Image 1 (tube, rainbow, N blue to C red):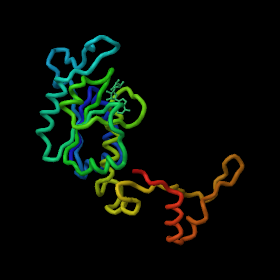
Image 2: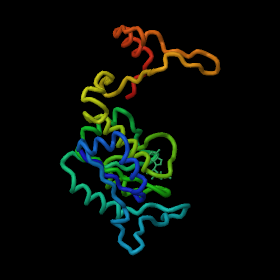
Image 3: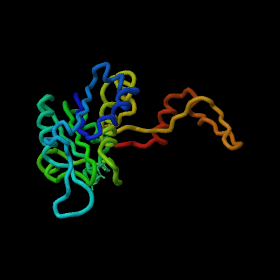
Image 4: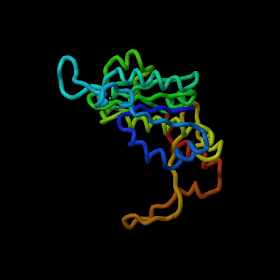
Length: 220
Ligand code: SAM
């Protein structure tokens, strides 16, 4: 599996990719991540990737031609099952179910918008899907790309702990997320003793499972 991220700010990803489980998983060869500077596909000496909006209005719009060329070239590097995602706040909501679905692809190409957005022809004719990570407007698609990369890649065996690490909490295409506690057993917060629920110290695995199901929430 390979992730290809197209951005005008490639350095945003530098430290992110060099840390933690993402770094380890890449070193183990579980998946590959390639960051592409969109300006490489710009045609003029100034490496212009944006222009004024037709019809007037504020701000700049990302040009479709460098994006088209970038996607075309990057697609050739991947194998059969590919998906091209354009991040927009009005796109389809990204969910855990969607992450599970994407984990079945061999190449995910993500286009990060900036400025006032991206020429509509990218959504219509170049991307397979417009995706939003929530009902708010960010400054760019780089954070959404990290969100997708992180939630999809953690589903691959061996990325987070042992191969069966996520297995127990998997429910269909979602995860059971329940409250977690660690030492100390007792903690004074504002003069009050805030202790770990007794059931978790009971050693009774059946009861612990029941408690986790009751207190947890399924994220789909
Ligand atoms: N009016 C613009 C639009 O509809 O795309 C908003 C542009 S926003 C300032 C710049 C870029 O940030 C967008 O092109 C998109 O790539 C990204 N973006 C902003 N909010 C997002 C969200 N909630 N989900 C996914 N991408 C988002």
